[in-house]
Image (tube, rainbow, N blue to C red; front, side, top):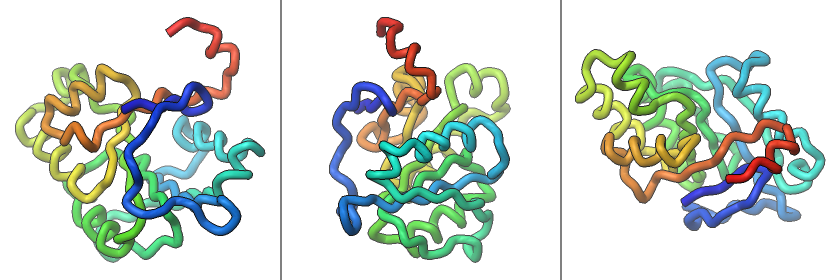
Length: 178
């Protein structure tokens, strides 16, 4: 399924647990490995928009590496903005165990057919990593339909795959036909 942030929303599957808190506020924790002013951190400025602030209480924290770094988060939704790696798999498993009622979403910004062809020396091992990293999360978000289809071919369960076209903050881009 697809959803366009800031654009024309489409349906997503029901969450693992209710996502509302208090007066309609959802609590979201974004996990980053670099909380500087890079592209992902800049894109998360979407949550500073007053319209979003009425709907979501959002915070960004640095993602740990080992199981000890995974903590219980007071959030209904946990969004991982860090690519999966073999070293982070124990962290992901611990994060799921410590947050059994949270909906956990992995956003994949970079893994594509071209990335695999150009940068991956062992495609079987790489695809095993993607499949294993998808196990403890509820959803894996792709940046395009082509990426979503490739992730499915790579073995990520189709039921977990969704597309969210990136938000740029440039409203005039909505005038460009699909």
